[in-house]
Amino acid sequence: MDIKGDRRTSTGKFRGGEAELQTLRRRLDAWRARCRGPQGRIPEALWRAAVGRARRAGVEPVAEALHLNVGALRRRVATPAAPTPAPPVTPAFVELGLVAPAATCQLEVEAPDGATLAIRITGPLPDLAGLVAAFRRARA
Image 1: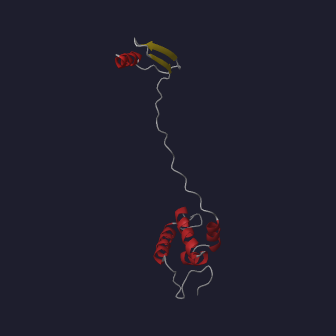
Image 2: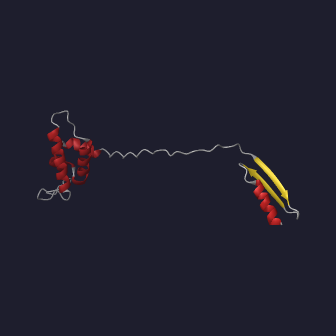
């Protein structure tokens, strides 16, 4: 009884996933027992599970096993799965320090031996006194 679109064996059992299908059938039966009447719509979680199973085992056999409308299940199987929305990104807190206007500074220092230290700085000023002292110590 292996007909195209029907994934059942000759005994009428589904190949693989029988337990999954039975679990889904029990969930649908429990929902049906709680929700009587025409206004009760099958929850999306149950539809998603049925659609996933139908994509693997075929629409007609799954609809028959779960007592679902074949046309409704076929339409849902034909509709591409909606992408799972990405979790919202929580922006990180970034503290920006005070930014002083860019200043340009030029400094030239000449050692007794004639060596020259020329410094051109744009932006925050470093420890100029320490730089000059290090230059003088290196030349001594």
